[in-house]
Image 1 (tube, rainbow, N blue to C red):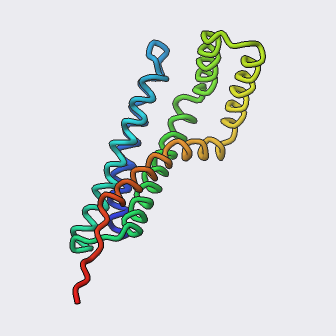
Image 2: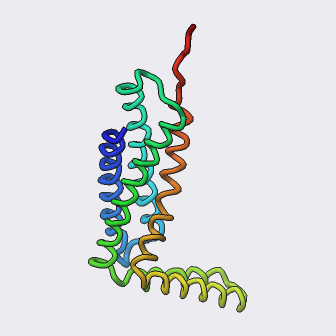
Length: 176
């Protein structure tokens, strides 16, 4: 189980990290990094987490002789998710702190610009400004940056692990 989790977790991590690095291209001011960053980011996550399905299926075929329980399948998917997610977080931390340290300022300005186009009431705008400032404050701590980044990717991986485990589970036939 460790071999499959590690192998497919690293593959998923490489895929999602490449997409993370590619999304930096959307950071330029002439591109809509909100729209294209989301498409590239979540598209990369889905592509990377296809390795969850592949890893479980390979384990089922090679080790389980065509059988795997839901629990074992989910655990394999969970390990793959955690390995890939950790690589994603490390990639983001490097990208953010080395290449785009002003990301949060630009992102906050974009959020404020979007809020202004919605023609919010004074109280709604004050709440939005407070939200923006809280995100900027959280991004001052590397621990919070890492946690927020994990919260971005792990739910996607867990959902795919759950679906994969449900689809691929097959209990051994017990004949007497």
